[in-house]
Image (cartoon, rainbow, N blue to C red):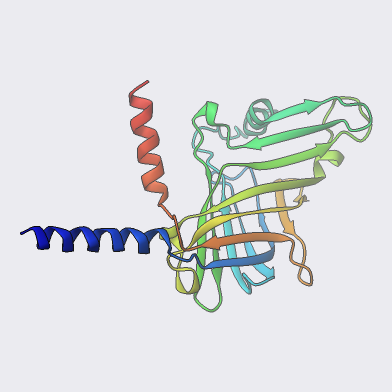
Length: 233
């Protein structure tokens, strides 16, 4: 019996040793993309093409949680949806010489969920997850504190990406990680306020992604734990 217990103890220690010495496999990728979408759509989703980098070629989509946003009433002169977005997401920075508006998505104070995104590569690989931060910046070119159409037309944007293990397919099955990007968000149709999301570029992909196969969890696990904590407050 004593020998059996010693054997079990040795096996347990060996298993712990192996677990603590697992060598992670890391993948450092990059991407460029170009797609179209609009905050005015009922489900604002930018979708298009992965145009460069190791996470290409392929397609992508990125979706903003607009479940609490009003729709525009075509029978009124104002745009209720845009007014809501401007009031709840944009803040003005009056720093002299660098006046601008910054919009931060999601606004968790309003109950927004994190943004969702997916990269579908032509070879069948998939990476996807959520984003806790998507920033849109509009420069106040004349520093008058009024956002004009010409100023909103050409904006810059940036964001962070979290890749979850349960969305990885193919090469990325079992991987999770983080990434980021910066680019341009340009109005291409003033009537519908459709915009082009562009992260440069085909020859020098500026979006980045670092993935690993160790220490991964699923968004369901994290959200469930968050929900449990909120019930205990």
